[in-house]
Every structure is written in C-alpha cells, then in structure tokens.
Image (tube, rainbow, N blue to C red; front, side):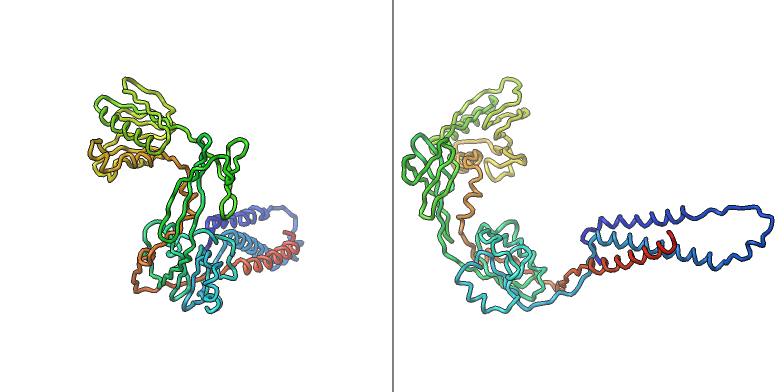
Length: 431
C-alpha cells in the first residue's frame, strides 16, 4: 500500500486520545465499611467481567475509526497491473485539427490513440481546445512516455525547434518518431513603435526552414493604422484581420561609464562601440564618461558600466562590470544576478572586431522587451529526425507498469459500519 499524501499519517497518534480517556474514566475502588457482607453475596462476578470486555471492544472500535480517518486523509492506493497494449499512437494536439491526419486516425484501433501532451489522455477524454496551438516539450514528454503501459509507441509530431528544451533524454521505451510537416507559412507583426509621424512595424514571417524579420515604415495616417487618442496603442489591419499592439515610443538610452586611469583604454573602446550601436540602430544613446575619483553612492542609471576593481555601487538598471575571466568563451557574459553582465577580457583593436563587441553589447541593452515570447507563435522551424529523437538505451530489465487503485471507497464503507456499531454499543452501555 502507498499513500499519495503520507504526511497525514501523523494523525495516527490520535488513537492515544481514546486510550487516555478510557484509562482516566475507570471508576476508582472505594472502600466502604459495613457491618455485614451478606448483602454482597448476590453480586455476579461474570457480569462485571462482561462490562469490562464491552468497554474494551468499544475502545478498539474508536481506535479503528481514527485509524481509518487518518488513512483517508493520506489517500491510500495499492498497485494493480495495468492493461498492456502492443502499440500506442501519440498525436500532437495541433495535428488533431489537421485534415490530412483524419483518415489515418480512423484506421487505427480504438483506445490506442492518445494526445501527445502531459498525461497522454485517450482522444475521447482529451480536451480538444487545450494546448492545440501550443508546442509541447518533446523531450520532457519522452521521459513520461516510459510510464505508458505499451510495448512500443509511434509519435506523430510537427517537430518544432521551439519544442526542444534541456538535455537530450535517454529512455528505454521503444519509440518511433514521425514528422508531420504542415508546411503552413506564418506572418505577423510583433512590435510597433512611433517616431514623429512615422510608425515602424516589426514583421516576422517563417516556415519550416527559416524565421525572418523585416521592418516596415508607415505614415501614421496610413489606412492600415488606427492610433488611439493617447498614442498608447495602434490597431493594424492585416490580411488575416486586425490586431492591436502597444505603441512603443522611441526613447534614448542613457549609458554612464565610470573608469579608473588604468582602464581608460577600455572605456574608449566601449564608448566607440556604443556610438556605433547608436548609428546602426538609429536609436539615440546618450553616453556619459566619468573618471572615478572617490566614493560613489548608489546610482539610478539606465545602463552603468563599471571599469574598476572597487565595490560596485548599487544601481537599479543594467550593469556591465569589468571582471577578467580566462575561461569565458565570450567577451561579455551574463552574471548570476539578473541584469548584470561581465566584461571578461581586456579590449583591443583585434578582439572588438573578431569577437563582435558591438553585437554583444546590443544583447545587453534588451531593446525588445518580451519579444521572444511574441515571436514564438510564428516560429515554425522544424528539426530533422536525428536531432529530434532521444537517445535509446538498452536495459536488460524491462520496466514494469502499474496503476494505482484508490482504496477510499472501501474505507468509507468500512468506516460507516464501524461508526454505526460504535454508536449502538455506546448507547447500549451508556458510554
């Protein structure tokens, strides 16, 4: 027997309560002096023993009731053999709405087709509207497939790159992966920004091979656009319909560089890189350079560059620290703390070009907040089968599959019988 919530087994200590009450409620022996014992001869000793015996049974009943209540709270289960199937077919939820797979599903045995999502529900029990447009985590589900009571499995999937997360799993299950390319192009607008009378739209389009971006500039008076009165959002008319996006305003970015004399060359390289970014992105970057001459208190810069070995002042914005690290693979790497980055090597005229300093600095600016989540629905890039498959491991021991049988209904029934019996005996004995 196993328990889903074993912490409630501590409630078994409650059986001590009726034992304690039973011991405390025993009548004390009182010595009474009498002149004659002739009136005591009619006392039946068997009747006294019967009374004690009934009290013991009543105590046991009450203890059993408390034990059963504790078990019910702990949710008892017993293992039972699962019904084993030869082949199970797993279909990614999105494909269930695709016309090309309908005929295939009709030809497969009943109850052998499951939805390729957490829990692997049988199709007739699956929520058709849940997760239809979401891409499952293929490798996480690959681990879970080992718990399915099936000799082998066939997975029908789109094989999207965005469905691959974490390390390639190693599984024992016999799985065949079948890529089902829908070849449906994606196109949309994920970001809109205003600059004077112009509205710039960031468009994304892709298919199973690539994902591309392009910027489109429209006049705010364009028939495709409808800007609200506060210039906070814009309604865009596309071929697929209308969408509403927040309207971003092009604002300058403040970068403040603090440096020591020994690192003044590093400051100049970084200053030049930020100016190149300003020109390349057509986004104003206001650069302020200042030599460190004393103690600097907490600051509130949008972007702080600290070229010094002295303690870093507290800053609410993003921070780039000079922290040489011979083992680092990049010039700039993220630190363990959010919004903090490390410059890992001294800069020179060679590595700023070879290691793409400007491009690495762009990544630290976070110019497109939450843009990755907005792009995901349009990412249709697929993987080759060799890249998608988990690693198959051979194990001499075959994994046994069980299902857990809930004992609660039987315990409730037994509990009802014991409660009725306890009430009858209590009433009869006056306990």
